[in-house]
Image 1 (spheres, rainbow, N blue to C red):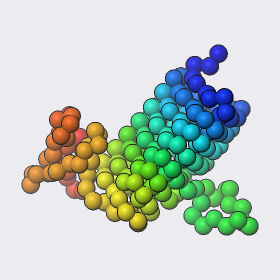
Image 2 (cartoon, one colour):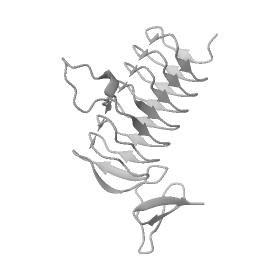
Image 3 (cartoon, helix red, strand yellow):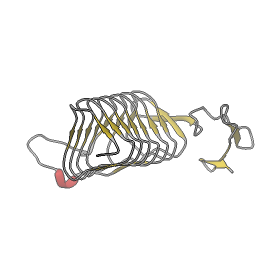
Length: 191
C-alpha cells in the first residue's frame, strides 16, 4: 500500500519515486524516472516529464507541464497554467532531445499563473514571479519580477510581502517581522 494518494484517472509510469503524503489529482501524468518529494500536491491535468525532480512540499496547480531538465527545490509554488520550456529553438521536424536546457527553481520560489520560464534561467530562493511574466534571464533570490520580458521591480520576503528598504538597506516583513538586508544588489535574511 502506497503512502501517497493518486486519483484513479492519473497515470503513474514505472520507475517514479513519489514521497509520503503526496497527492496527485485528476488526469495528471507522471512519467518515468521522475522524483517527487514528500507532501507535494500535484493538481489536475499536470504532466511531469521524465527525470524531473520536485523537492518536498511543492505545490503544482492545474494545467502545468514540467518538462525534462526542470528541478524544483523544496517549498516551490507553480501557479495555474504556468509554463516551462526546455529547448531554446524548437522545430517540429528537428529532434533536439539531446539539447534540453536545465532550469533550477530554488527553495521557496513562487511562479504566478500563466507565467513562462524560458529554459536555462534559474529562479533564486524565495523569488516571486508575477502572473503572466515571461522570464528570459536569471532571477535573483528574493527578487520580485513582472512583465514580458520580465523585469525586477523590487524585493519580497519569505512570507510573500514586498520589502521596503530604508536608507541603511534594512527592511522588515510586515507579516513575520523577519528582518532583511540589501547589500550590493543582494538580499539576505538577518538571523
